[in-house]
Amino acid sequence: MKSKYFLLTMLIIFSLLLNACQQGAAPAETQPPAQAETKTLKVGVLGPFTGPSARVGEEFKDSVTMAFDAIDWTVGDYKIEVVWIDGESDPEKATRAYEAAITRDKIDVGFLNWDASEVIVVMDLAARYKIPHFMAMGTSDLVDEKYHSDPMYKYWVGKGWPTPSKLTIAYVNALEEAIANGQWQVSAKRVILYGNDDEWSRGFTKAIGAQLADAGWEIVGEEYMPIGETDFYPVLTRMKSMDTPLIAGTMDDAAGFGAFIKQSREVGLESLIVADGLGWVGEWYEMTGDASNYVIDQIPGWTTEKAIAFRDAFTERWGIEPSPSSAGLAYDEANFFIKILQEAYKEYGKLDSDTLYKFGNEKVMTGQVTYTDGILMKEYKFTPESAPDFVVGPDNFTFPVIQYMSGVGKTIWPAAMRETDIQIPGYANK
Image 1 (tube, one colour):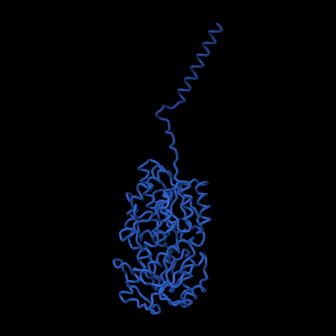
Image 2 (cartoon, helix red, strand yellow):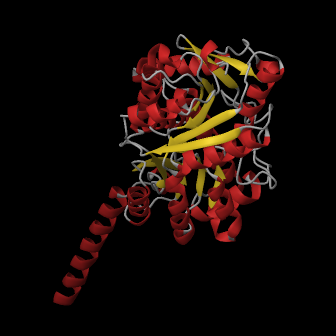
Image 3 (cartoon, one colour):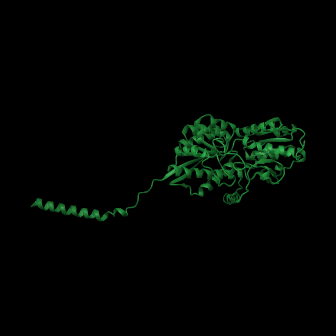
């Protein structure tokens, strides 16, 4: 009897427990779906966020932010996370910061850069760690030579600024045209080259110097100054004593460049000045004043409705005036980069170092994927023949030659884009 009561009791308990479990469980179709795994693509943006070119870095950061804001920092099922890598315009510091971004922050892909001197060493890191890096603006002949020297450098996927010689010829053409047309009376074609003592400036002067020499100009001197220097009176006094109708060069350092131009007139330098990149920051005129009158530069302008709309939106949001060559070009290239991410996601269904390297070399560098919705250029395009540079030309990447007067730059070359004729100050007619 005890066994029967025990068995009956156990059956009752089991039945009650089973019923409770059935009541507590929701039907299968009402169970909440499992949460999808969060995917993140880490993008390392290299720029001069501190140091002598920090103003450019500020425009980089603001432009990239505006571009990614427009897509809610999302591509497919990936959230984009940016790691800002401060190169500080210093190759050694840039190397340490970039390697930390790879090993500590675990970036999947790199984007942008400003200083050419950083590129030579950072290219090795991209190759060693197999991190594709898109559209770094730092450029010189050495970058191109390194790119073609070994297949491992294909991780440096497309430069954001063509090698200097592809752009400097525009200056020579503009000046020679002015001489041929009788707008510039030059008795002796003598020129001094100048710049910062870095890879970019020396690449620029090497290119324009060779092209000027081919056009019959005698290079009578070269002057190079360290980045960060702001006292140029001694070197400018020396340049004045050489009495040339032309000086031609470039500088990375916005504050230094402004001081150089201002001091050139203070010491009475009576030369026509090619100052490539003077307008790389929006406040260039505040730094130079009318000392910049007659200065020749090569820079795109806010010439389209889209470009003007971007400029105004940028100024309203960030409170600073952008430069086309810094903010404008960074914005276009950020949007091209976004297109690359979107197309690579469609192609492979995932975004990582391997898929972006493959897509970059197979589709972008072959010219199959281009960008035609920019605010500055008609089309950003690479081809096997142009690599690692953009295709340069009127319908692709091009910078017009402009001349500054009273804080306004107007195009003087090419003829199809000309807004005004070149003006030669009387003291430069030697």
